[in-house]
Image 1 (cartoon, rainbow, N blue to C red):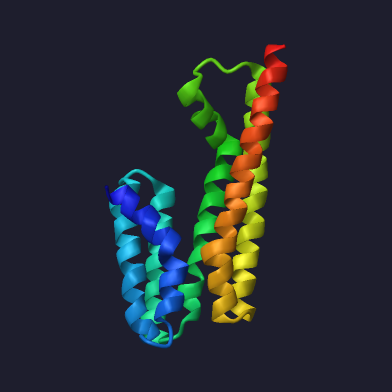
Image 2 (image 1 turned 60 degrees about the horizontal axis):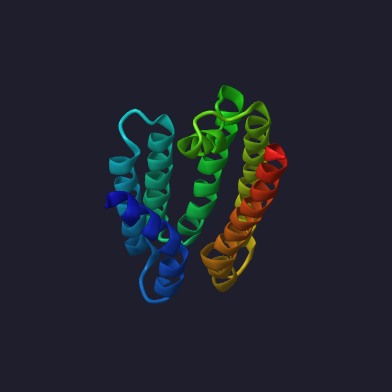
Length: 181
């Protein structure tokens, strides 16, 4: 239940911030980021080093927002999420098995070598996505209007993520068919 709340708040975060700016001072919006950070801590588990870093960074952004009463630290949260995802996926490339391989093994524990190569490539593509998405989120936070930032971070980024997932699913079907032939 808490995990679903964290996901829902993370997805809705840019739109909530955008809808609130101009009506609520940024320092009070820092509470939203504080709640999100603390919820992540309860979901991340005590052993997850990455989860603790994400929470620490979210709490730092919340503190900066409260102290400065500026919206920029609030707008940097999507950048933080992309950096965290990039880190998790990239570390899985270095340490193995990759995140995508782990997910694939949930449905097929005995992956052939060509499937493992495929999952590695998909993990690399996701790393590229998180890098580009994070850079665009950073650019919109720094230089675009709050409307453009919210549109990108709250809608376009999720659409691009969905397109990547859908495209990968279509490619995976073709790769599986080719492996069986």
